Length: 373
Image (cartoon, rainbow, N blue to C red; front, side, top):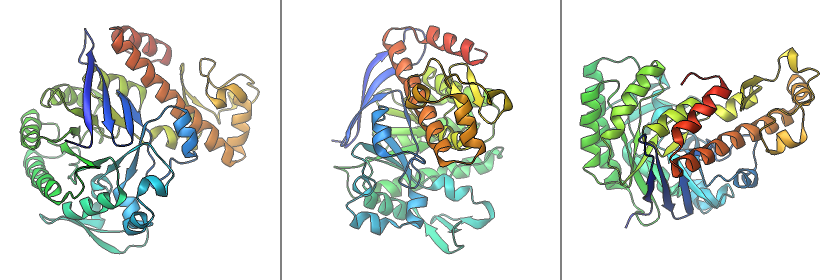
């Protein structure tokens, strides 16, 4: 029995969108779901209690960052990541592969793994599939991601093929090194770049391992939006219907809608918290850049259709003042709003799938937000 299991509840009548539940050792998660990102064992500018009050049942933390600081052995001694960060709901840990590969010249890829230099102090480290599993076993996350190579865009076919085949070999090593199958589940990651036949090859190789869930990696890495949707559309069809499907690293409303429409169950992204710290809010009428002079004397709520703590209590003028004054409360209030906005959006998406009205819900949202459907 896997520690994590996906349950399919309902499929939308007009699209591939699906409503499900993800059962984990730390609770059941309603899907489709957006996972707030707590890279270094904290969702920036937020307390765990606030995240729970918003209805989040799962957050993401990162192997690379926690390995470098404070170190997985310290977290293991603290009783695991849940106790260390005072979070009693589910946690997914990214393997650190994307972070390592984004280091560019500071890393070297071999069959063994990746030799890299820390972005903190320049010290040299080796991250292998076995090491990624050791770290994640120490963290005690409910869902562990396999160590993979995220190919850049653009990349030639030969490079992408070699990369995905190495990713498959690394996945098998991750599976063999995984030590706590009763408490933690391992998800594999599909690669293959923008090549349909290579996506198919990658999927067939990782699905053979019969894991409880699979991620689609290597998208939202700089390719045109239309190309991402095209690749996503056929990639989902290569994955088993009875397993969880996770699109890594996307978090704009349109990406969430388009992913759900194509059958994705899980999403994560640093975007809502990052743009909040930079003074941008997602609202029902599109983005609001709070530093703009137009809001200096705007005493209305950030989003009149939102019932989050920020919108109930503070005006755009006050939020602009906080941001311009470089006050910490600016990041706290805007982050609160952005995460609440996306979590509520996913609630609406789930309800629309249950009611077989997903396309209507999407069309209505796009019209107000300013997207073209």
